[in-house]
Image (cartoon, rainbow, N blue to C red; front, side, top):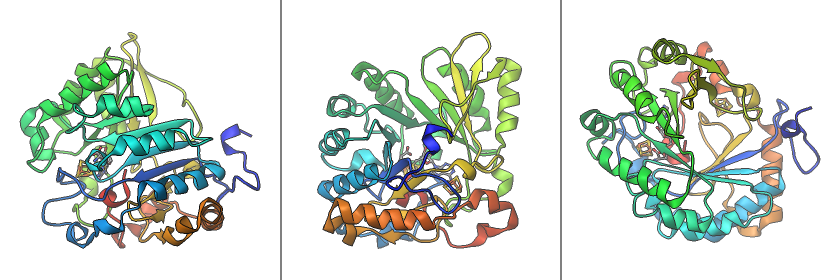
Length: 341
Ligand code: SAM
Ligand code: SF4
Ligand code: SF4
């Protein structure tokens, strides 16, 4: 058995035999952008309902991460909302980087504020950065940020991350039919040979407020064919079991790209991710209707938290993306900006 999928008394498997390896922690439930596919302006009820006073403190988050690490979590991704809006984030990063067992600490950001923070994040011990970038064209980019973003800020953030020593970055682009399909080849051309890896994400039916339609999804296969017609590609093997993106290398040695195909090629069978919202709810699937409140267990300490999560994980049977075709998609789902990507 693959080491990743070994389970022990301390490292539980869920009801479908999947271990818990990866935790995404939302450090904030709000954002300075209003990307229409995530947090469309004026249409997100939670925008006003969320109460910042319920956010977990850094002590709480560290306790949670220590408990999850005890259950086998090795990788933490900080997300949001926009995580760089959370005050004193480097302090949290330094604390999480020191948790035994956590060997990969990453952060996903829209990079609007990265230029001023990249060095502090690196100094605090952040290992990796993923940056969302849906378009190179300033007008298309601005529209995709809900009229709030400037693509020049993202490029300043990328330059600052390079200068801070982050090495290879991941760039995430969500492609929607008729919206930014024309940005695919320019994005590939721009990042080819840069050492950074662009990944194309299928537009997902997360939450209920983005008006998702299957027709707006551009299947990865189509993008792969389009890109390969210009720059021949060869498939690369996954770096670990359960890797979300399928990887391809440019045949001419120009680096690699990835595709995250949760709609056209669901990967629930290997899903070992849990999500913790900024106010302490555990979600065992991105498409869950509701979470499980962990705040009382966190307040009791690492042992209580680990015991509670262990019990919840063992009951987990989520496989939404594999069931999407059978019509589950009209039910209530939590919004992505609330639990993080
Ligand atoms: N604000 C940060 C950012 O945008 O990178 C972190 C949080 S955001 C929710 C995490 C990721 O989710 C982003 O890369 C974003 O593009 C992606 N995302 C949001 N809504 C999506 C959707 N409907 N389909 C696919 N990806 C989505
Ligand atoms: Fe904000 Fe990220 Fe959602 Fe865009 S995708 S609205 S940047 S949380
Ligand atoms: Fe994991 Fe749920 Fe996504 Fe399936 S749909 S891969 S179970 S988060």
